[in-house]
Amino acid sequence: MMRERTQTGVMAGLVPAIHDLSSGAKNVDARHKAGHDGSRARRSRLTRFLMTLPAAAVSFVVSSAPAFADLKICNRMSYVVEAAIGIDDKAATATRGWFRIDPATCRVVVQGTLTADRILLNARALGVYGASPIPQSGSDMLCVAQDNFVIAAARQCRTGQAQAAFTQVTPTQGADGNLVAYLAEDSEYDDEQARLAGIQRLLVIAGYDAAPIDGVDGPKTQAALAAFLKSRGLSSDVVGSPGFFKTMVDALQTPSATGLTWCNDTPHKVMAAIATDDGKSVTSRGWYRIDPKTCLHPDVTGQPKQIFSFAEAVDADNRTVKLKDRPLNWGGDRQLCTRETKFETNEQTDCGARGFSATGFSAVDMSSSGKTLRFAAP
Image 1 (cartoon, helix red, strand yellow):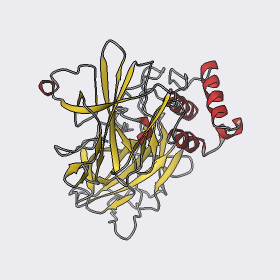
Image 2: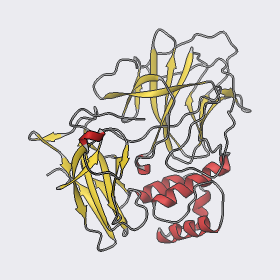
Image 3: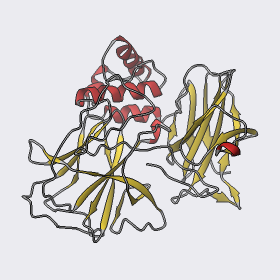
Image 4: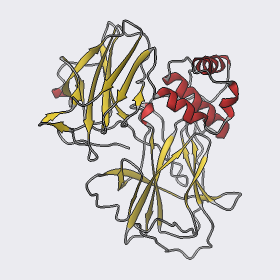
């Protein structure tokens, strides 16, 4: 999902990939291409169901097809995602989220036996994945909020809400009688592959060599996983536990003795960008979402000679937070190119002519191999 800012605000760089499971449309994770080529569309037929929302929401019944039970969203992606559901009956549209779903797991997002004209779906990757572009083909722009929400009239956003692209899905009836829709990558992982690819992706972000992210086990993945477990004082038994992805994400959101860590000590969402100088060119990349009171390790590949950082606090409407009429941001004097949408560029001249803005980054002292930057209000 893309979150735009005003002229002085920032936009997050997360765009969810949701396959319309009845159309065969192809979506590609443009950041990490996993090692499975080709794509077979999962085809399904939507039968009748009922969505029961809290009292603040609206319920819709519009189908005469036989009713089935709950609607589940199953995640066959290599990302931990947060999903939102939309119910459209032509007269009104309601949205509800966020439902956190680990790779290779399912979650009930609708209980009961209610029906609707269309079922819509949106998902976003956790902030720990940084600016990973997961393509989304949805054309319905509906309202969501940053935190858990229920919005009864989701086509006209209010304060604290933002538009996000939703994709129409047509769930299929599973063996348990429930309706199921899948979040899928072009790599077409099965559950086992999605889980392993999800572990590989988090290991790479943590700085361990588990590439390629392909859902295929091997010596590199096992060595990286063993090193991660040892560094955190964890036994191998935890790998098979239902909470292992939470364990990994929590580990990535705590300060590290190596690499760069951003920690958000403010009550606001912080959007951050990083730049690396390899001696030949400077590449700037953003945006990374850092939720309040959490930390994040931006993905830094190779061994750059210098690292630069910029961050800015934004409110619920993605406008820059100001204190005493001054933007609450953390940067410096090094002018590098950024733009309001997700970006990555190794050209740092003529920013404005190329559709970018010149933004002041600060150099990060990495001489001690590890650096934690804490963002706090003055």
